[in-house]
Structures are given as C-alpha cells and as structure tokens.
Length: 402
Image (cartoon, helix red, strand yellow):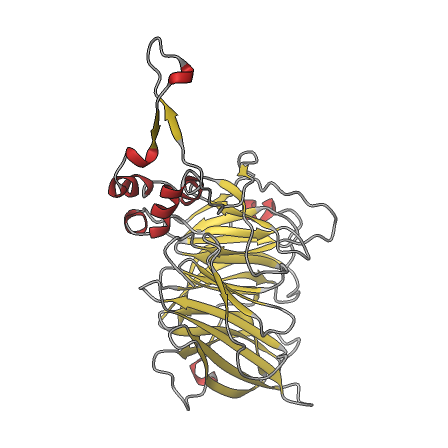
C-alpha cells in the first residue's frame, strides 16, 4: 500500500465559543501590558468568507471552533459554499461488525478522519448517498429510515414507508435536486409469493421531501426473478439489480437491470420489458451514479465456479448497452490479499472505491484519468479473524440540509 498511516482523530463538527486573540509584540514591550486585538475587528465578513472558501472541508470545520463569529460566518453558508472548489467524494469505512464506528477518507488531502455518524446504530444498515446527503435504513425492520449530512451532522427521520412488512429483500436509493434542497428517497421491496419460489412481488415506494409523504409507484409479480439490495437513481430513472431464481446452477446470466422512470411514472408498463442483462457473469454487482452516468462495478465470476472471481470490472450503460470502462489490474487485485467474491464498492462524482470485506485496504479508480490508486493506510487494524469492514461513498458538502 502507498504511504504511511495519515489520519486526524477528532470529531469533524464541534463548535466553540472562545474568541481568538493575538498579542502585538514590539521592541521593549512588557508582556503583561500587551494590547490584544480581537479577530472581530480585523476582517469584514465578506473578506473572511472569501478566505474560508478556499479551505478544505476539514479545515473549515476546525475554523468553526475558533470563535463565535467564525462559526456564524461558516453556518451562513453563503460565499463559502458558492465559491468553494468542489472536493472529491470521501469514503466512510465501518471498522466494527456491530457498532457504527469508523473513519472517513479524504482523497484530496489523503487523510483519514475519525468521523462519528448520527442515526446509525450498526454497520450493516443500508446506505445511499447523493450530493452530500446520506440515507440510512435499518437492516432489521426495514422501516426506520434517516436522512443526514455527515459533515454538519444534521439529520431527520422519515415516516415509515408503505408496502409489505418485513420484506425478504429491500434496496434503498436517494437523489438530491439541483437546488440542494429537495430530495427523493426510493425503497424497493421484494416479497416471495407464498409457497411459490419462482414468483416474487416487487414494489417501488417513493418519498418526496416537499410533501413529506410516501407514494407507491409500481407493483409487479416477477416470474423467475427477484429483487435484491442494490439500486440507484440516475437522471431521474431508478435502476435495480434483480436476481434469477428460475435457473439455479445453469450457466446463464444471473442478473438483469430493471429501469423505472420516476419522472414519467408509467402505471401499466411491465418492469421486465424494460430490463437489460448485465454485461457478463457477475458477482457482487454494485450500481453507481457518477456524474449522471450509470456505472456498474462487479466481480467477474468463473462460469464453472461462480463463488470465485477472477477479476473486477467497471462498465457504463449507454442506451441499453454496456461499455467496459476498465478492469482492475492483476497487481491491484492481488494487493487485497485473501479476496473472495464478496467485496464492497461505492462511488460518486468521478471516483469508484473498492475494498474487501475482510481488510481495510481501500482502492480508488479515477473515471476521468482512468487511474487506480491505493488510499493511505487506514488507522484501524484487524483485531480478530472474523472482523469485517464495509463502507459507502459520499460528497462532503456544507450547504445541503435535511
């Protein structure tokens, strides 16, 4: 792995109230008689905002602890948010099997931050992110859903979604509008038809932040296919990976991609008629919205032994056709050490992150530069053989609110 451990152990948002002061030192001055100059009197707000806008997110959070005035200027989120150079997406890595503790990786400064997440109680919760907001859903009841900004720690709990209770499979997706105010959350529920393994009822439920209400958009019984735990929203279209149940053990494509237009909201169109096959025999497929392009990351499984993957690929969807973007070079694939078909991957903006569940090694792929790069070494080491790690990607933003 590249480099040594590089991390800052501090909670990202702690607002202070002490006013910073500088002592003016002149020749022959008596220290006890030094005049103090308050930061309140040095810079006008517009100049201070302009200066702070050039700082990375972590430094802005630290600056908010300097004094009340700086905190208020940062909280105003005006010039600071408007003039900031957008940061690359961070990756939050859960470092425990049970609790939700973890670290966030900043690829710009190549640092890890000890970041405490609100709302989340366990590391196995569903997570989906968009434009600085992250949506979480508990893995037990599938009814407790929260939306939060990990940087500002602002959060809210949504009302319970409609549909079947305790579905067999669920997936979660969120999309934030261009105004960074409105957002939509989608929950896809799948329930097996009683006593029929081949038939599964799939339903799509959408939450609109403007109305604070859920709406059931579609409901269909799939024959030989079931929903899973992977979905994403891209350009107003919901994409879901579905799994084959009608040809177990047969060397066919095991997954297809369902599409549902959340803008036109078709009422009677068949979901299966709008589906497309995945590009190859995949394992552990993950969907991502990268700059309004639908991206699929997955392990390329062996046909005779699907539990073993021989590599990891990245594809983009163009007019219902998949185009391969990259395959992980073998030296990086070997760099994960003991690597099976289960791995975590998540992406946003122009970065794709990949990590093994069994280790903290984190690899990033830059979609624009077509470059692979290891992160700095995570400050956490594996404490026991069965300890697992996972995570999700999010954009660090101050201006988006829940």
